[in-house]
Length: 78
Image 1: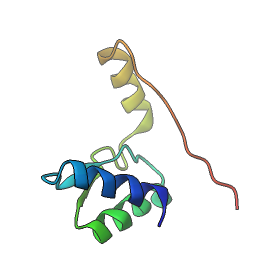
Image 2: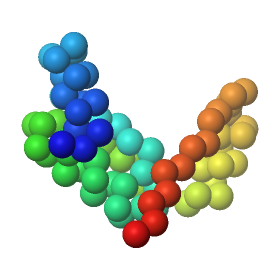
Image 3: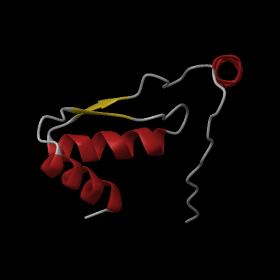
């Protein structure tokens, strides 16, 4: 079982009313599909509201509307 699935199972145990997971996937099919697959196995809905949005526009909106924001990335090499 992968870490994401383990984490979401723990969330479901603590918060049994949880029905969906929102991810910040924008352009990575791998990341979006990974979240969708884990959600499917756990009976959760995967929400990716930022999917395929213009990245420059999103960055501009974050800068204009936020005082603090965090960027992080997961990179895998095979």
